[in-house]
Each structure stands twice: as structure tokens, then as C-alpha cells.
Amino acid sequence: MTSIGSNAVPTRPLPLGSRHLLASDDAQDVRDVVNGLTEDDHRLLPPPSGRVQGIVNGLKIGDVSLVFVAYGAKVTVTSPPSGRRTMLVLPLGPMGVECGGHEWVAKRPFALDGTRPTLMAPDGERGCLVGSVDAGALESLLVSTYGRNLANPILISTHEPLQLAAPDVVRSSWLGVVRQIDSQPAGRNPLLDYGLASVLMTSMLTGLSPYIRDVLEPEIGALGPSYVAAARAFIDSHSREDLGMEQVATAVGISARQLNAAFQEHLGTSPAQFLRRVRLEKARLAIEHERHSNTATVSSIAAESGFFHLGRFSEYYAQRYGEQPSETLRRVRSRT
Image (cartoon, rainbow, N blue to C red; front, side):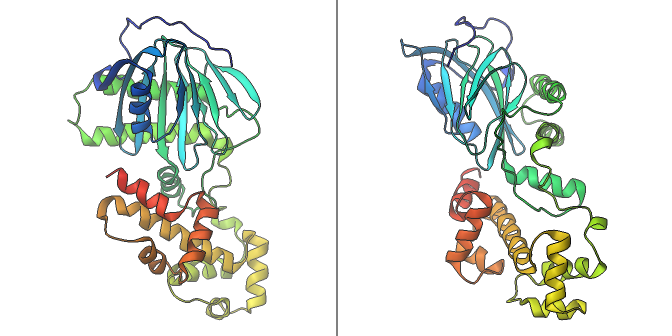
């Protein structure tokens, strides 16, 4: 991959300069500080000398980790598949990028692929901004904003370069947040911090909109007869019980065969699969809540969510979210 940009040490004011974290000529020190904040695990190929002139500024604001990094040298960064960690990169100078067999020079924000590694050659002097947030936080924002249930988890991946919708909106939003952060003392206004985190997350969702169209369920009016909505509500309120589909059908006044046909036609899934999805979503929310309580176990969360076989719960969870529930729990608790 062709490296782009100069080796010069930046002399101008740097983004997030008020939240300075590190200045170092050790490439691995720079890597470790960036990884620690973004929860990425990228690898760094330094120049032949092994030394850089690295600067890292950044902070955690709400659920979002926001980092500025400039290496002061030509380096190659390899980020692993981002999985359930949604990551956007805003190059502040031309950046060589390679992913999935495609190469391009990025001058606008782009997303890291959730299933394939991404190679980047950032501008050594100008650097880049990196925003990182757990996909669950974005999903929660979508659900609360649109008042619709989650249909599929966010997993960003395509066969083409992950270019964002409205990239100039994303760029201006991020740089506006950075300017605001640099103009205020740290920790003085939690309400403002919450608002700035919301701006970052909303702009992320705007940029990612082409890739997350199937994340939410269709609007209620498109979901078919009233008994389908009644069955969904019954399943949701009884999901923690040992619930059979005959019981659901009886509750809404139709046969089990009619129930299955209606779900397949209007929701594209069976009632049993819908029940499993509801249980998984509740389990995921319970695990996310552990950043505050730190008391539950995977087995207790599984049972409370309606799963009575721990092995099957772990299998279904991994299929849906791309990681074991124990991994999610460990990651959530590491952020407390």
C-alpha cells in the first residue's frame, strides 16, 4: 500500500488539544493509547527506524470514544474487523485505504468494515480523527428515536468501500464537536457532554444510513392484521415464560397455523424465531445494564430472559451479535 503524507511534526493547534493524552516517539506506545480508548486492537507498521513523532489527544464522551492521532511519520495501520464496535475515521489529510480488495485515497469520513480488516496509511502530519462506539448504543438510539423494535443488529459490511452518506455533514458535525470540546473545561457541564455525544452518534447514524436500513422493524402500519400486532405484544410481555406458539395463537383468537402464516407473510419470520429474537434483545439489554450493576452472570441473564438452556442461548447470541455473551459482558464491565 502506498503511504501518503509528510513526516513533519505538526506545529499548528491540534484537534482535541485540550484533551492531550500522549506525545511519544515510540510507535507501540502511541498504538496502545489509541487502542485503549477506541477498544480497537489495531496493528501498527512503523517506518524502518521504528520511531515516530506521535501525538494522541482524545476522550470518552458519553458512549463515544473520540481520538485524534498523528504519527509524524509514514506508517501503516491495520484494524481488525470492527464487529460490534462501530468505528468511523475522519482523515484530516489524504489517507490511503485498502479493504476487501479495494484501494482508494480517502479524503472524507469512512467506516471500518465489521467483517474484514482495513489497512490505512494516514497523513503523518495532519493525522485523523477516529470515533468509536458500541453498536448496542447506536441501536438503542435508533429504537428510542423511531419507536420501533430492533429487527437486526448493526453490523457494517459491504463488498464496496464503506463510503458514508452525507460525508460533509458528518465531517462538519465532528469538527464542530471538537471545537466545542476544546473551548470548554473538562467535566464542567455533563448535560453539554451528553448533547455533544448525541451529535456524534446521530451523525454516525446519518452517515451509516445506507448500511442499516434493515436494522429496525417496519412501521406498525405495514405489519399486517391487528392480530399480528396483538401476537407480537403478547410474545413481548410473556417472553420470559416457557411460551408455546399454541398459547400465543389462542391468546389472539386464531389457530397456530394462521399465526405462523401471518408472521411469515408480514414479518418474514416464524413466531418462534420472533420470540427468540425478543429474548435475545432483552438479554443484550440486560448485559449492557451490567456496566452499572456488575452483579449478574451469563447464566442468570439467560434464565431471566427466557432461555432455559445455556448452551443454546450462547449459540443463538453469537449468531446474532457476532460474539459470545461472556465476551460482551467482559467488555461492558471493562468500561465501568
